[in-house]
Image 1 (tube, one colour):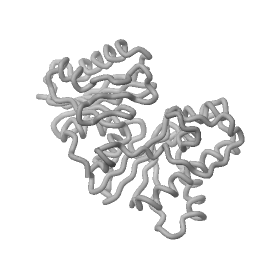
Image 2 (cartoon, rainbow, N blue to C red):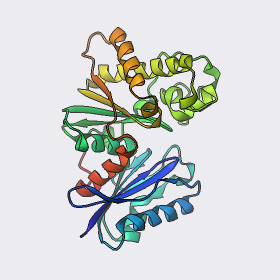
Image 3 (cartoon, rainbow, N blue to C red):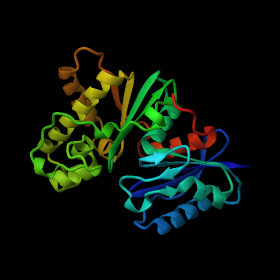
Length: 288
């Protein structure tokens, strides 16, 4: 039986799983820390592929990784992995494994995972991740929305009227100071508050939540999604408290457009991994 292999190539962790022809996971590798070096990272990734594939042929592989990247050529340059810039990942993996390999921005892949494995299929679906960085994937009728020239919209790099008790520490890794990602992501939280998200005080969480809600307000006004799902370690770690606080803030500041349903990821840390299996099975569709 040929298997489909999914890979989640994160800034801090690597995950791999193999699925059958129905997309059901049959084997998965233990989560590993992402090596800093490219060669070490690729070697570990290939070992994990071998672990999950076993002796069975691989029909195709899908992968999620941070942007920016070229989803057509499979050349990746993730912002939060400095040693993975300009890497022809598709060519590397197809040459090594002899099967089709598809790679897309992790938030697009995660959106497909949530949509495919979710209980409902909203017409306009926005997935937002708050983890090492912050970004999103927007689906229309189950297809990825892409911008001009097929580029990935970077919702984490919008600007908002923010609140912050340590404004001098705001700095985005894209080089522009006042991005939303620079206020709410895991890296931003460590930079601004000097601690991990799980250690924030309530007054600090209030700032992060307010800033995130203002970003979601913008997205509702522009995209009018039916559903917004929040995932990533920062969001899932705070859990339903985050959702309740965001809804309370949005109820006071979204007036002209409907307030979208906001909920927490149903797949947790497996969202991008499950989505990578979806693109392994379906390939990457032309943009909506």
